[in-house]
Image (cartoon, rainbow, N blue to C red; front, side, top):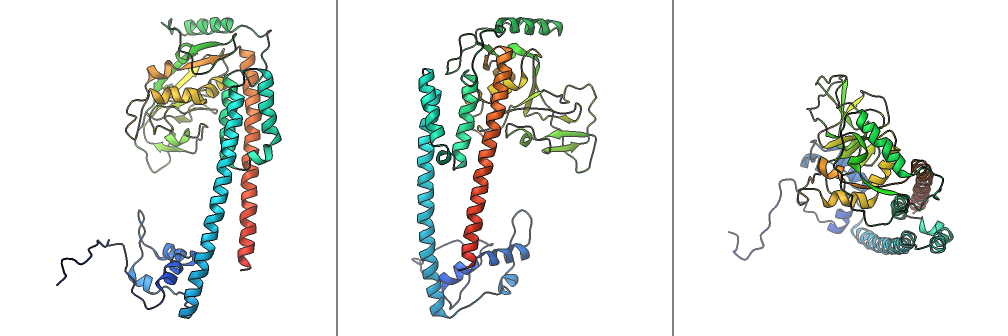
Length: 394
């Protein structure tokens, strides 16, 4: 009979209890070694959650040194692991200091009141470039800052000879009238939390559209090839269109259906986690190749406006925050934005020529960020290879 004061615990069906006269600390570390993990993966059964039968576990061979050596091995492992913890903390602390310094430098860029202050902030970054951009986190922040500078009009110089924005907007209205879209009852959009050049205009997204936003269609996928591919949400969560994230559907879609994507369409995630809701991407490709799901909205801006500029403006952090803050069901796992919210999104609109210059400059700088991340990955791989070479000699 079990005494009332005996300790009580619950043992799961998928847990095995091993009783052994050898060092339990040594056995624990041995069973967590890569060779043992490979054995579990090779002999485990199941799909959703793999498990290994006791018979297979009993048959697993382990290297067993004398008991005294077991204890020495455990002591040495503990010593080395403690050192690894110290090194990881030093690396983490260094990375956090770099991120803090880098964030302050970028904030100075964003809040520069004049050209001298902006130049000084940029000079600091270039002077400490190799140190600041030794971790990927700082490159990610640099991307956000470049994007923000672009929509603030600080990325390229303004040209007083550019055609005024009002002329551009007049042509947009003409295009909308030709498409029988009617006149918009547009109120003055509320500017976002930054200033733009005096010759730019704040406009609601809906006022420059010639199509949409419209929701997509989400039929059931099939496990065989058909003539219709439907995107999944993963196709645009990165902010770039990735057509490999699609599925075949058996539904017949008319060739003139609005569900088909055309080159230049902008897709916006209307439902996802708060991190991704409102993320946009531009489709560049052949028509009638993909349809889009119900949790996305599709829109098209006027041919008088640079689609890539609108996309980058929609991708900037203030625009993302605008959409996040107006998403419904934010306490759940799938917040959503609606068409009205999306059309009310305030966007900064420069002259068309300046839009083109900004997009070209942004492409150039983002390519630099790509190379930076590649260099960081290469350096980390080299460090790992060096460590493996050292460990091979231990």
